[in-house]
Length: 349
Image 1 (spheres, rainbow, N blue to C red):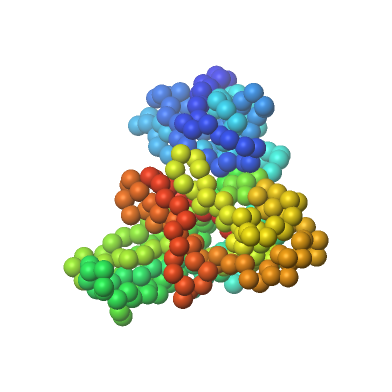
Image 2: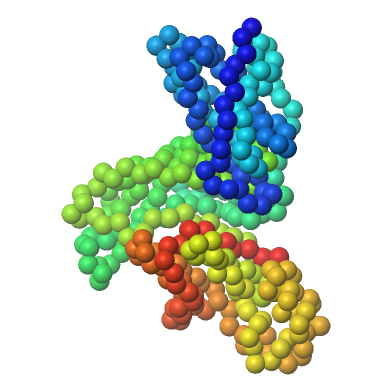
């Protein structure tokens, strides 16, 4: 049997770190080069990595024109190679060993997806379809839901109306060994009117802690009487540690991050101790409070706790970061820059 062609692949952006990075991409094929689509592997200097493959388009003669692929990105440039190097053999459809995505559908309609390191439970629930997320067996998020608000006029003084975002359906759109796509459908309800049908797709990849979300919304409301003022995804994050062991990361421009603890222990009038300061700066758990300098440990409740953070990108050329200690307190400017990379992190130790 003829050997299938190999395709060289190059990463558009260099991959940093050792964490598994999910990727999806498409490959075009010459007419007649591939009568059928086999399984493929990504082969680089470190070895072979399986990827899911599906046919995205065919030539008029029935041969494959485009294939889609999903899996974890290689560390560098790689080649896309048929799993056994030949077309149409039984080996191309046999299950492969290694980490795969496990999916189960429950009697109540919920969908349980496990990548080996990330577990997410999705339910067709009106309010909070993302029931919970676990990383390495630890609950990191729950009750995830879409939120939105709008105003009846474009003026800055117009009152906002909170939308009721309803999820009406949830199902598996694509199921592979390396990646699963869950599709959620729903709509918004505002001022007694049903508007903005949407689709939310969630991508979970074998061996990866990342959950990718792609949101598509159809604008079917009157543009003269409904002005969208906010749209986002909200999730409850369970925090178990004390505020000085909780950390916030907000991405700035050119790869920089604002990195702060919720309750900072550096730059104080009194020093808690070098070991305490160094641990917090490094993002590690601080020593027990009893071991701190008593001048600080006895007054720990007086140190501000920055509960709220906001990043506003009001144009392509400027953003501002601000924080506050409570909902009835003013926002304090924290940083500014050109264009934020759009990443945010909240977690504890």
